[in-house]
Image (cartoon, rainbow, N blue to C red; front, top):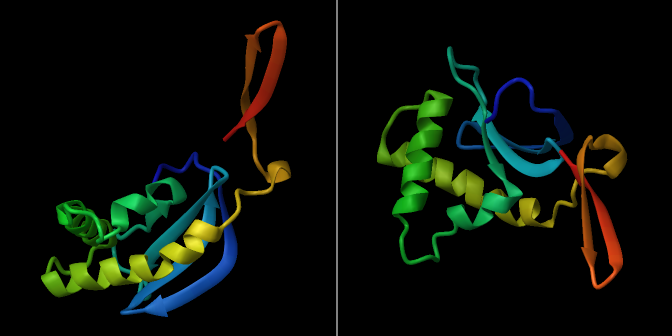
Length: 133
């Protein structure tokens, strides 16, 4: 998960599975699935999966090493035992929440901060769009 400057808005949805809490939130306006230990651990932080990174957690891809590596990283962040059982549980908890993460809408624009503007002129027409954080 990113540093303390990120804006986090919790959706209030939380589920417990394998000693982990999975909840859905918005991090800088982006939908995220966040897991953390159900019992607080010294030095542990939360681990977030952004909606744009769902593909990294699919095991139907040819190279599942990426999923395993991400689970090992999550176990380190969560200060959990570095065992294959732990990694499998992390993968299961995250994969069980991917469908709900996939269907989450972006944060309402009134809760998002505009950080820039995009303006394109093509064939004499002007197109503009705000860029939200």
